[in-house]
Length: 474
View (cartoon, rainbow, N blue to C red):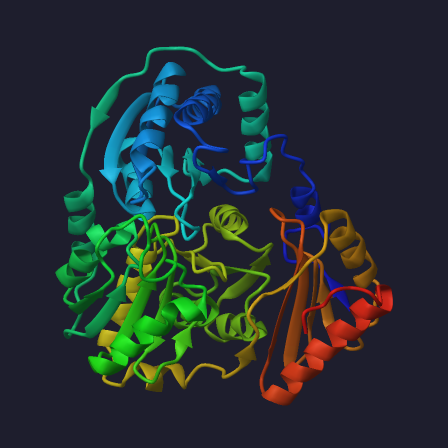
């Protein structure tokens, strides 16, 4: 059986991935490069003027900007501001804050326009930009437009204004007026030396958490571990700290605090699809019939949990931007991707905000007398692999996926939302193209170990039938 996700044609994701970007720093959902090689102050100025040109063409006149805690942030932010002003945009600088606070500033102060200087979880030598115009995160098509503007220098010209504002207290007031925990919860927060450490601990304390900070000093060298909550290795210190302090929960943020993962007292890592299950049950109780948007890498159980809670599950291509776009189209109250970007458009704003997501999850847990591990036992239990990277070139990956789509998956439901996904009653697997690297990505899940081994073998056998020399790493 073959199906497309609701509202999407099977070729949408492939068309999106096929857009060729003429400059290497422009990716499908952000701008990223090595500082002093790909990115300089001059590059930042040109990028800023290109962004300003697009914003002005769409009728916007001002933009909010911020940076994370990387050492290269100040000089790149300065160059960015220069370029934005040269395009004619008025610039509101809100300083070194997490990305969610920059999106908050954009929504409150700048007509939904914002540019964040951040390298997210990448090594210290990297930095980049994330762009929102009119409340929309720029995707592949818009990044292609920016790249062409950057390459050809066809910029709008003007003399924009400049001001500085702090939004931390404004955000804190908005958050604490929305959420107050019914009881104090003992929580360890690992900010991975990212910029979240400057604000996230006190924001969560303000809603009633009994907080233990871990690696909350902002340090652009990231001396303790990578600020990557999607990596189990980078959650080990948090797991140890939760156990040693007998905390109820651990929360890990990435380098700019727009992604998160949870760790329970028993050491279980709560990945984004399980967080979405918890949030869906809570939100759909008061908003029945509405949509929950998630990406193609999530567990097959998520759809069933959403439907059981009275909602509609909508699967998108992988990543932050496709989820954001579909959430906006559907006016959905909830969405998220498997990287840990969570969108809670219920009592809050329609952008991804890991700090607010953490607060909403704490609100749910604090309202329950049971321990977090007991609450999680109510959810479907399953096993899932990490994402497996297959070292293939883009053209090869595209050919493999096209042939894999024609394979016989028996009674599985096969979807082409992003690559090839096959769902059986007890297992699922997905093979897709990494739009930035061109490599093939695989992920598998199942109700128990035997079924997990089976689906891994099924995909392996089908891929090796297509290419017996394919360098599968399992």
